Image (tube, rainbow, N blue to C red; front, side, top):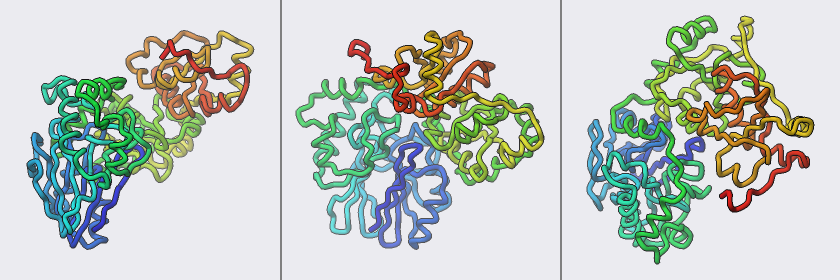
Length: 472
């Protein structure tokens, strides 16, 4: 028997591959089918089932395309009603895979179709729990995402989750390995561990939501307390996951087109396309196509795309570092942005070689910001980190306007001769700066290295402080 976790850091998401005696299953696959098909071919096994734990909100699953290419059966638990052929498994139904068995455990609460899969070895021993978004390491699935679809209140969903955990999962043996659907960094929970594999016994002992003496009321209160609003693209991804949509390979064949600079510019104008530059912040600052926005691949790319590009049907043209064009399109497709028209052949260097107009973003180091603040105490510093980060530690004079809120709070942008923008490390501030420039705001300076560099500079003028508890 083989059990493999296929973890994608950008999405903080775990897919799983299980193989036994010539048969295999894949749990919660990403949109690209090739990695799973290649693995099965290498092992000489047939993918028998594609198991879905629920209708995912934070990414577009590859279940339909993978099933079509492998001949596998798509399986959901009770209450699922997708628009494609699937097997609706019943609670405690057993699926045979080679010499092992997989027990279907219906665990509503995160969503009403949420289902976990319990792996039993060839001797019938419970060995691993693939817990989807029902149980994470250190947390449980948020119960606020499915209210509209389920026609239930937040409290009703949380109560269902309480019962699922205590009546279905917690009675399992402590030595059962837990393989969750997500880890730290996912917006599907609020307190997830950085670890991606644990045991059920560890969770019973340490997970706040699994306390044995916890009442329903306490559970509902603690699980729902402090939930941040979900990203706007979540319900759109749920809708896509209920449909028979093309896989990544099919999308790439249709949309992975290379355009020379002239055709790229004409396409952007004719199709009213957003030009998305996926290079790193320094490269973008040194030169970029006017009006483009920067969301770098080497960061939380997909979640920020989903949070900031509000229209999932937006036409997009990509500018990428050489060799990363396909990766950019793939990672957009993972969160449902399928209207990628193509990419700039030769990247930004090709644009420059034709002596076309380009723009830049001025950047300064932390010690330069210190000099600015020293000579001009009224300098306008924008902290674009999350509100919780700002409350914890901040520059006394900074104005907090989180990147997450930029679209809805754009009109709150302060009037100033120059805006000095920083985040934690420089990734988010460049996204923020690029969006401002794309909307005609050019009086800005990005602080290289962000708050981390500001603290490390150790200069009195920019010393961070801990906010008093009254601000929490």
